[in-house]
Image (cartoon, rainbow, N blue to C red; front, top):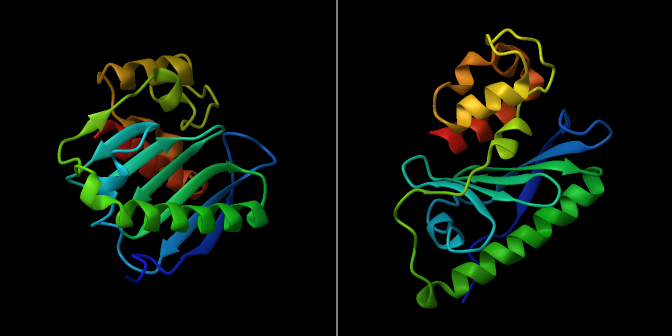
Length: 174
């Protein structure tokens, strides 16, 4: 039996705005992850799973791992070398999950185990007030209560450095 996935290629490295000195890693899988993501959603550590957008976010210590059908992002990574190793390990974990899929029940409904701090960690944390809230933590609390939308955080949408965080935040609050 051949592996589900050959590799996840590191395609982009960005500064990690949540933790200065660390990086955010973006990888492109050698094939779509759409078939395997529902099985991966059975694993522990899920922050958000959305079957409609085929997006899955895990909390990792530190940071987050977000899987989309055509992209993987890891936040708060030490450097590109560590990021490449993490993508190799993730490829192996995806293949192992796929091989065990007969024993797993694919998740077909949205799953969310979210906390305000999870949302806050993805915000710019500048307390700029452009959203109308006094602090980013206050904005995160309103996001958590579904009283606000990520689109109301102007820096998140205007600064290209926040693109990966924005995508993760949108998938978590959809």
